[in-house]
Image (cartoon, rainbow, N blue to C red):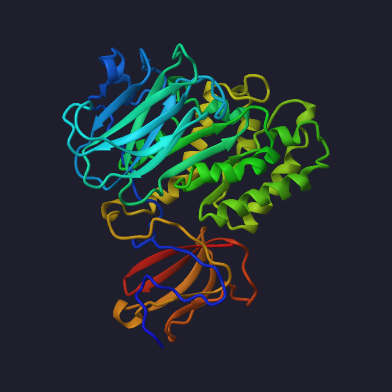
Length: 450
């Protein structure tokens, strides 16, 4: 047999991708914000330029004319950066009334003030209609980043930019989220002061090394079918977002008191999950929130489908918004949409769901090598591990909840998992963990099976 390096896997007749986590039980590597509180250089020296990196997503910077720009001098030598911007926008994710239509993200290795020097375009965007956006780009050998705006959605530039966060993602983009949903999501994720702490801040408050990057992608009035029609576009627009948090169902179930259309909803959501997993991303579905009024009596039928899908695809169990708002109805302002307090609860519930992944990570060692492009395999995978040299004494497959799926033989080289459980039956698509024992220590590898 031809010897292969550890990074090479033999998977005859099957598509595969493997996402590797070298740290014991590591799930997420930090993507720290490196520009928070930093002095910003702007075109024209506008008075509100300090608002762009102060961590307040409710104030804003207004450009006086076009083109306009904001430049950041980056400390250290990160190899890859993620730039997130949010406009001062009351409203939807798409078709935003106040946003950057045309812009470039530029880098420089020799500027001294954000104006002089040589600048290279690393991202060029025309026709943007999103209120908040994430871009990742190579930064090797550079010292400056500049967001250069050539067209605003309104000629009077009304609205302005609320915040620009630049994250160091040299070690991967695992700590990234998009929250897709309807008007409940839209209202809850403005990130203004009355909706703080938001999800990202909740995580940071408990795990200070982490500052998740997050996109608020709520659109009022939409259903799961709308998401299914647009998911290919969203995946293409956000290739480096790792966790895809789905919050659909309120509009799907509205008026369907007997759950007659719940089966169709489940089928639509299944298609969403399959497409997200096929791109190597991790979907998580929240339960549809409780809503007052007889027209919402069918929600439990739809939530049963969410529970079934979560189990079928071995997903992380999303937050139970139904039980929370049933027990905290004062946090509903109109019987359906949350108050500011209810929005805070939504962020807290999501953070609580994700806390175990951060708690089980080992951020002090997060610079260890790992593959940043999480991929998938279909039905059969070989791992060319040197069992003797690595001192492997045991190998098993677990689900995300730690339940044993099957034990693997360490007597044969390479390690081989056929995608089956202890009963010999093929396991459902989803996320699984290869857990290796090495005496008193261990390593974990994560798979996405579709």
